Amino acid sequence: MDFTLYWFMFPVGMMVATTAMLSGIGGAAFFTPIFLLIFPLLGPEYPLASPVTAIAVALLTETFGFSSGFIGYYRKRLIDFGLIKSFLIVSIPAGIVGTLMAHYVNTQLILLFYGLLMFIVAYVLIKGHGGEVTEDFDASDDLRKVVDTEGNVYQHMMYQAKKIPTAVGGLLTGLVSVGIGEVVMPQLVKDGKVAVPVAAATSVLIVIITVICASFTHIATLINQGGINAVPWNLVCYSIPGVLIGGQIGPRLQGKVPQRVMERTIAIIFSIIGVAMIFMVAKG
Image 1 (cartoon, rainbow, N blue to C red):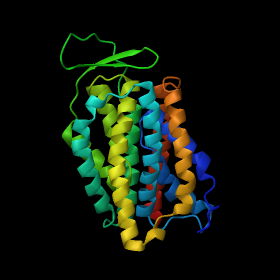
Image 2: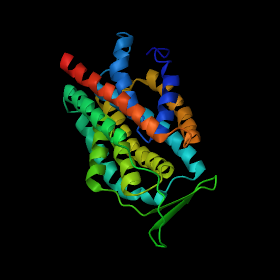
Image 3: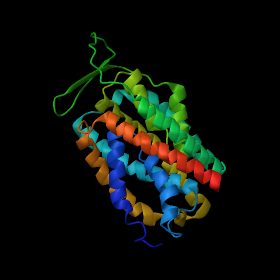
């Protein structure tokens, strides 16, 4: 392995992780297109062995980035730990099932599905999660209160995850690396009336745990099928340190970048990725 080949993934990893922390969108949603669309343009030595390898590496990298982001959000005391259980009992098994499916589904079908999914995610982002919560709550045993390190107080009612959307998100995360973060944020903000900073922080923890289970299943399967060198360690040795740093930058910028501007910008990028993916399938 040439351990200088993917040096540029260090700064790229920093930028992707920062964006992911601010938006609540999984970093793999950015890494997978980079691996599948950009790497082939750089030269014959850059493309990964298969789309499944790209998805596995994207999820592995995201695991470290979101873990770093979790530390940042934990220090700011923005995570509501009481909200995560109902999501995880659905997303974890669904993510593992999706991971196992990915190793047997036709790769062209995976690429096509990924392209179509990008349009769906773009639509969700353009539509928006909803505004900040300003309503008052009556005293209740179900009332949740989060007080961050700056003294900001956020209140919302206890929320239970919707099983079908959460299961679909977990399944897609294992199958094509995108899904769980994209279904958690709308539920928390729009349905649960959770303030965006708390929703983003809580979403990060849900994504971490789901992605850890999916990525480790992917990596274990790759190693079982092709040996230890089936994993491109010369890539992750740069992408992982990059996302560890970006995962710290994102929480520090939370609230300083307009949420709607970021969401619409990402929606445009995802739409372009969707077109490129579908074109790639049609061409190949």
